[in-house]
Length: 130
Length: 389
Image (cartoon, rainbow over all chains, first blue to last red; front, side, top):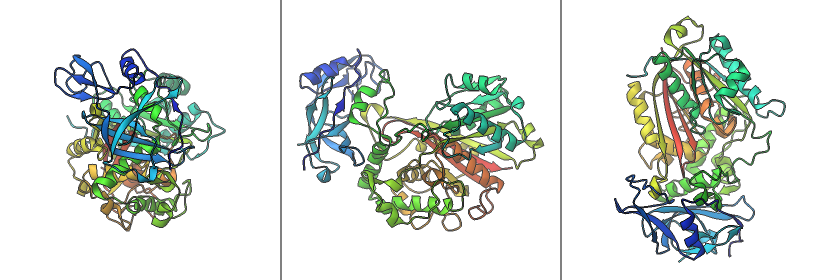
């Protein structure tokens, strides 16, 4: 069964992270990568949380990942699936799993990004079985 | 410098209310303070240090000092969610050891029931300036589904089962039946827990703590004052605190900050897990207890499911009695912040003042542990070890 759609509230963006949501509006998932230590991170910051350098850049991500963990909030109306997805680029990000059978989800499952509209804001990256 | 023996817990109080329609938030703080001071045999005029966290109204320490009429020379409003008050005991002992105060008062209160708060299943937005909010709030993180993701991962990596988690609730209910003030006094079985409705996979309704109004307070004093008071002295032996977060996306939900706060506390106290006769473990959810016991070294990582099974946490039955007041799972979780009541029951055990049916024999060393925030994103961990003189 396809999941009933939950209305996703608009992300409250700010000047530091606006490029992430501008990219999302253009259908691109980006992650921050540090030019000093080479590590990627999420959520995005100006300064690398791993080494502290401010030499970070936005990089396009493949949009492919695997489910690290998830939970379907059965109590909500409609129920929805929150998850952590580990991106091919390394970081694990909080997201929703959409357009899927909640009862068939499993940890380790391959997923791909799909952008879901929000209530009056830019779309946000969500994931669906690959 | 070690905290060991530098300060004593002289008074504790758990507010008896579980639904406070007829009391204000400041009033609950003040009534709790009065209760703990009376327990210690002190008055508010003896207090020269005050500790509160994010549940206190207005400007926190300023507003409550004004309301209660305190004359302070030390104030500390460390906020680490529900673990704050365990940290406050350690910070109070530090301040006392440094001569910054002699009598430290810690208060907590909250009215989520009276205010009709959707505590567990509504996403909390901590405000647009909070850096994680744009990347988390849209996805609907609630208290329950975040802890549920930690449980899901633990099950995946270690084969932990819902029935093993259920034993934690079963043990709490065995204790709560003797606590006339507990919100839930009915003894439940493993089947009751796993057959209760799923709130967020894999957590059932009975894996979740209660929602209550209430409060509590703790009085920490310098040794010279403790010696002249009439209550059984409870000595601070050691403490540790830690913050665990998402590490820029290097997320691992299988452990908590207790892997850092626990060893620090044991080292300072000069004891090991084998010396601890009773534990108060923050029990927002059953999974919180299981992971914390692993992280504190009471069993190996991944073995928590086996460790808690078959009544192992039931006083008088199992190897490690826990939360003998019924804990947050059955008794009380005032203001959605359970750290303070964890200290209170550990003090009752050391004094020999727990309910006779759950009092641990020869209880000379106890551990209280708080987990504030969320296992899945960011949380404070606080471990406090106390002993008899």
